[in-house]
Amino acid sequence: MAASTNSPSKIPPAVLGRLTIPMLVVDRSSVVLYANAAASSVTEHDGPFQTVNKTLVARNRADNVQLQRAITNASANGASETLMIVNHKMGRTQFVSVSPLHDGDVRVNDALVIVQKFGMAEEAFSQSLRELFRLSPSESAIAASLAKGEHAESIAEARSAKVATVRAQITAIMFKTRTRRQVELVALLSQLASMP
Image (cartoon, rainbow, N blue to C red; front, top):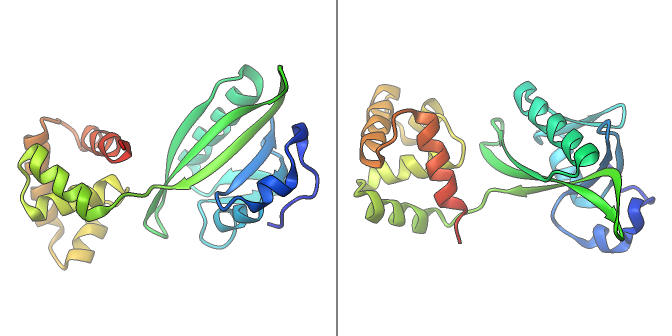
């Protein structure tokens, strides 16, 4: 998607265009009003989003429901929200911040969508998990992979291990972190990974 030359709400296109973080401005119906050059990295080919008839949609149906709800809440109610979207094809997790746009003191019915790759220094994060929860090196590596949005099958494949072995290690990690379900574990790990 090429960057639009029109920039709503008096946001200078030259400023947005120079940013390397994908940014899009959408209206209440998710129609893309502006996209900087970096936005093409998340809307083309294997990116987690696409534009259909100029409308921003997430490729994954469940993610799209979350995205559309966040855009509606930002544009109609002025609420900001951050979503975690997993791009399963690329094996990457991305944070998507959806915020209302303002023109001075007046809120307009548009939303700013900013997409950031979920970054962490994996070895430092793994080391922190080992110390915090007394995980083995193998368990901490699996926990770091879970925090990035990977699932047991892809972790097993990357580690040349059996899925049952990885699942047993995930169970051990859940016991050590005092979480009862894998979704609780992933939420905990994601919170820890996003801390400075």
